[in-house]
Length: 147
Image 1 (cartoon, rainbow, N blue to C red):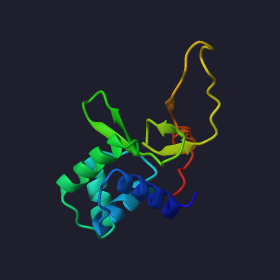
Image 2 (image 1 turned 90 degrees about the vertical axis):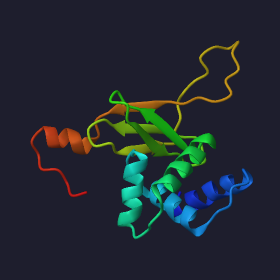
Image 3 (image 1 turned 135 degrees about the vertical axis):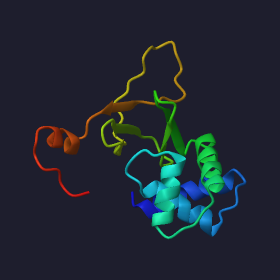
Image 4 (image 1 turned 135 degrees about the horizontal axis):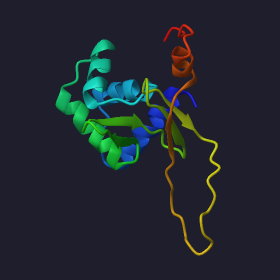
C-alpha cells in the first residue's frame, strides 16, 4: 500500500478518535510512517527537522503517545531504558526488526494459528528481532549497499 494511503488511513483513525488533523500533525505522521526503522521521539524530531519541519519536541511526544493509544504505533523498551517506537499501519501486520541497524519491515502475510480450540483470540502481536540481510553482509566483510 502506498505511504500516502497509509497516512490517510491513519488520519482517518485519528479523526474517528476526535483528534484534529493539523497540517503539522499530518506532516509529522508522514515522516514517521516513512521511516523504515524504529526510533526514539528525539530521532523522530530530528527526522522531521531534516525534512524541513519544525515541530516542538513536546508535539512529537504527544503524537507518539496518541498513536500508541490508537494502535498506530508500538513501543519497544530497550535494556538501556530507552524506548523505541515503530509506526504501525492501520491493518494487520507483524514486524521484522534488525537489532543492528534498527530497520523495520512490516510483514502482512500472517501464519499464526489459533493456539487452543477452547480459547477465543481477539488479537495477537508477533515481532521478530534479528539481523537484516544488509547487516549480515556487512558483518561478513562485504561492502554494505548505500542507504
